[in-house]
Every structure is written in structure tokens, then in C-alpha cells.
Length: 196
Image (cartoon, rainbow, N blue to C red):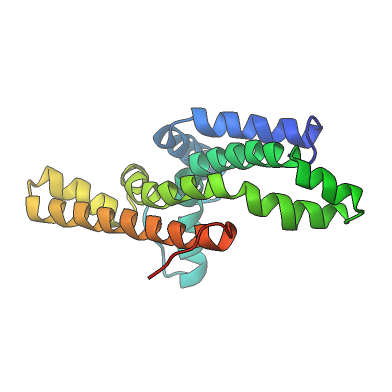
């Protein structure tokens, strides 16, 4: 947002557009085909391997699912932060701070970014819960053993107690993430105070 209408800005907008228009399951399959099948750099599925190194094997198994899971959320956050920053950069107090001679980095980091993060923080709370529910698709595509794949397997086996447990777990994640966001609001916006 600081470098509006430059090459970096156009690349960021292109990434955000592609990130929000590509479905995660399709992105996962394409990443698997390119990096695992064609190039042979990364494994296609599973949780990890013990040879030659446990940490290295687990990390390699994590790269494609992490990119697939976070692609949409990062693109959406990028667009939201950019639009919020553009809005804040045009306010009177930012212009006044620049007139006073405050260095540009301080204006951007201390004044603009803090106020611009209020709207994206709301979305970030939804993303934290969405990452858990979005993991159902990602874990299925990559056969990653996790709560999402457990839910799919439980649905196939008609094990409704496990399905209910997964739903309650996802609901608890949503509630906890929204609580964390509410606490962070008070830190970012001094007008918000919580009383006993």
C-alpha cells in the first residue's frame, strides 16, 4: 500500500487475485503434480519419513499442504491489509505526522499499520477457525493424518460420536480465536477497554 501503483503493488494484487480465485483442492493437486510428480522435489502425501532424517522428512511432507492450506487466507489478508492501509494513509493525522517531520518508516509502522490492522484482525479471527475447517479438504487431498481426515473417515464409517467430537473441537477453536481477537482489539485500539 505504501508503494501504490508500482510494480510491487501490481504483483501483490495479481497474487491476491489468483490466491482468492483458485480452489484449495485444485491448487493442492496442481502443486502435487508439479513439485512431486514432475520435479520429484517433494513427497505427494503422508506425514513424514524417518530416513534419512526425521525432521527433514517431516518438513518436506509439510511444505505442499501448508502452501495449499494458507494460499487463500494469505491472499485475502493481503487485499484487506492493503485496502486498510490505503485508507489510513489518506487520513489527516498521517498527513500531520509527515508535516511534523516524523520519518516515513515511523509514520508507516507506528501510526498507519497499527490503525490499519483493526479490520484485518477481525478477518484473522475467522481465518484461524477457517484453517481448521479448511484442513478437511487439504488433509484429504494429501492424505495427511489429522482431525480433518479423521472427520471424513468417521463420516464414511457413520461414526457419529467422532463427528460430533470434531464439530465441538472446531467450534472451540472458533470461540478461542475470536476471544484472542477481542483481546487484541484492546491492544490495537486504545478506545476499547474491558472492565470487570
